[in-house]
Length: 392
Image 1: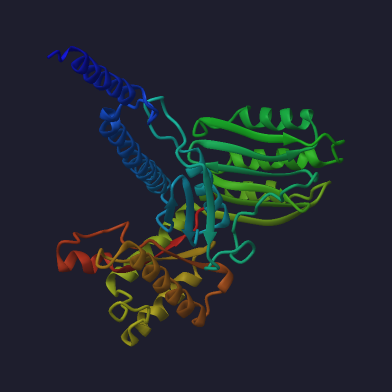
Image 2: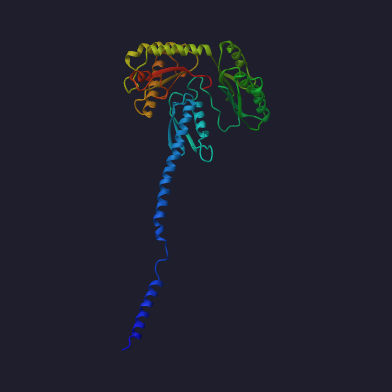
């Protein structure tokens, strides 16, 4: 008996079946062993995207917060979403609010590619508050947006003289810059010009009005000179020995436009007035009900004395509210502002002109005492009154 053909046929059948299993149609080749690696990469990217967003937002928040501290704008609070920043609060003057927004827009933070601006959009959400253009005597005017009328705003703050505005032509611009740099006092270390030319014929007398702003401001220790709506205004802080000279120069008639408010703050008088108010408020503190902006009824007498002292002070007064660290920053900021506004209202009721007094809240940002002790916290819950400086 021979089994050869049968065995051969069976082997052939098995061989064919194996061939068909290997070459039959099915899923294309895929490196399934890489699936864990791909999943890990996707998970890492998802986690990193969230972390990166959070990290960038923290950089924006820290940079904007440091800018607030550097500019002394403790009245401001931040709302940060990604690289968008909203600044809320009541600035002591409209210009102070604009300066803070500009500072946050241009603030830079270190990155692995070098310093960069982390905030891509910055806007202000300033409340009605106590200061609006034209409300407080001495508030700094703004330049009118989008007009072809020549106007300017010059500011002397610290060692910097800044020239902003729109002038008719290049010749006027160069004359103003030259006047700012010629024979300038040593205390002015830098002249910064942002003057734009609007390409019109210079009105007769405008150049003289612009040069008056520069020449009078160079005599001040700080202040602003502006020409807006055909009106020249000056706010100037300087020693008493120079006051009459500057007043006479600033008040002379103009061939173009007219002379508006000339406010001279004599340094000696400002310092004496602030010292008197400080002593008065330290000797008898203005107190409030706990967690409230209601002034304690026992403080009527100190409010009477404060109103009389404030009425004798020059310029515009700023009532400043401060708290201890009890409660959150937002609560303290709001409470300090409401308390300052309550004191402002009380002083107005006692005869201080509303146009001469504004209010601002600083929360717990400027402590005088140790917040770890009850005595220190009591020192930090306070009202201060200061004179608005000429360059604010």
